[in-house]
Amino acid sequence: SMRFVQGKTVEQQDVQALLKIRDRLVKSRTALINEIRGLLQEYGLTMARGAKRFYEELPLILASEAV
Image (tube, rainbow, N blue to C red; front, side, top):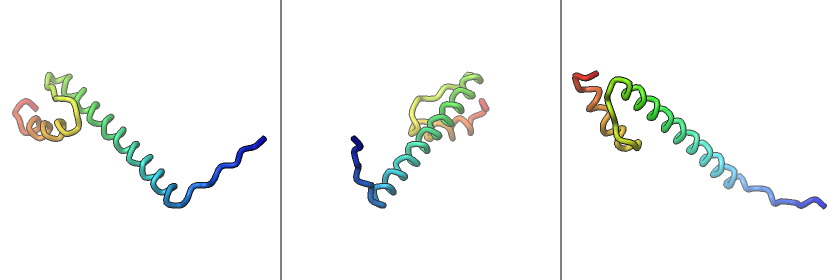
């Protein structure tokens, strides 16, 4: 007994594709932020967690004499 499923509209497929792309971008951004934070920790520099705090603190760290 095979069940039939109604196909998705083009709009539904577009939204689903955009959500998947956004999810990948967020995961990639998080991985990059974590990698940079880890590298900075090796030099004794710590940063708060979270993307917003990262973008606030990174310019200050790069401008400091510690780098």
